[in-house]
Image 1 (cartoon, rainbow, N blue to C red):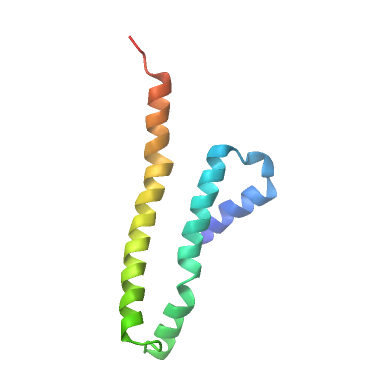
Image 2 (image 1 turned 120 degrees about the vertical axis):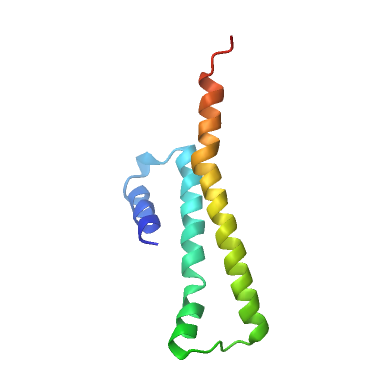
Length: 97
């Protein structure tokens, strides 16, 4: 959360850095930040009181969605930050002959 927050703070302080590609990366940073911020109160309460207070079904759903969304978001970020720009750059600068 610290790195995503730091990068977002940088873009807020220096709006001249925002381009269409960095705007997409900003959206990914926000999504990653929200996956850490939204479930945190539930996990904190569960750790402090050693019980899940909403019920067994919601506990299972929370664990499942946390696992699926975190993995999916990590793959999506890697794909869009590392792989897609490389494919675009290779397509733009590849020798046609």
